[in-house]
Image (tube, rainbow, N blue to C red; front, side, top):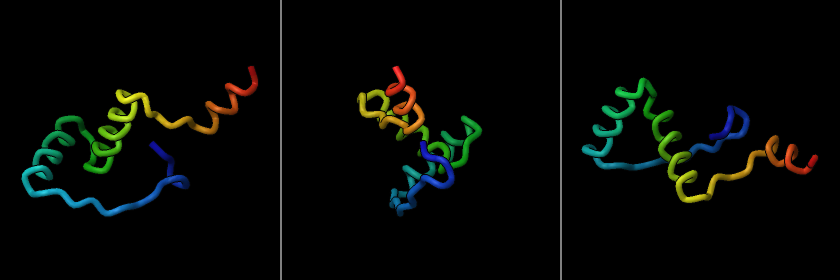
Length: 64
């Protein structure tokens, strides 16, 4: 996902059971909850074919 200078914060409300499941999953993957959510979102975007282009990749494509 984004890097430090290019991130946006938002509030996410989830029920307790979902949060507990996320905490277990993140622990199994040795990630923080935030890192796990970023991975889940990136994976969902990739699977849906909606991965945003990154500026460095876009600039590289324009050079060809």
